[in-house]
Length: 227
Image 1 (tube, rainbow, N blue to C red):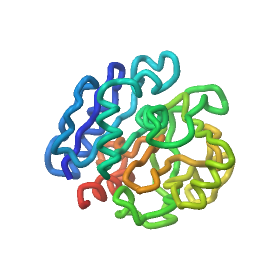
Image 2 (cartoon, helix red, strand yellow):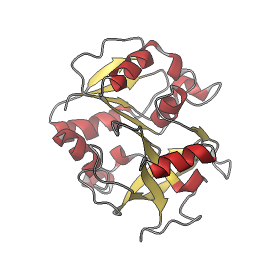
Image 3 (tube, helix red, strand yellow):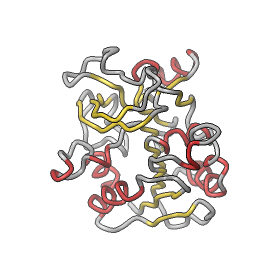
């Protein structure tokens, strides 16, 4: 797997993501500035977290108009892999690569805390090293992580098995208390219909080494490296 990480002004999680990808793939990812449009030779495009363009206008809205995103859409249309985490998830929805939107957290406060995610399906290139129903820990760091879509879209995501991860208790229960940002149906991550594009709000890249406090996020990157 040859990865590349897209950089926008204000993005600040690219180094965390690079550490996770380098550990899994055995080589450093290519860093892609937002004005670049040549993505040849890259299998996986990662849009990391942070505050692209300072989150002005609307989170991810300005980044979605950058030249690189047209190339990312073409990459996805050809069957390439795309991962968007946190602000990256917001950018993917704004760019039309995933449905729905990320709204202000239900409590209208920035959340910086660990959460637990339940794996809803493990037969994808992103989750193959997890098991369906497995619960793992991941850090949250966002003010606009409240996933929203209309009921028809939510029903379609459920019916087509495109919900990848949900907020849960450590025991795997789906409860309002575990869903701290108020996301519809406790959705933390979704796939595109071809299962090659994933948007995920929490940060698995921040738990890939014991020195970080755990390796709960490592299986996601190991899954990608093995693809």
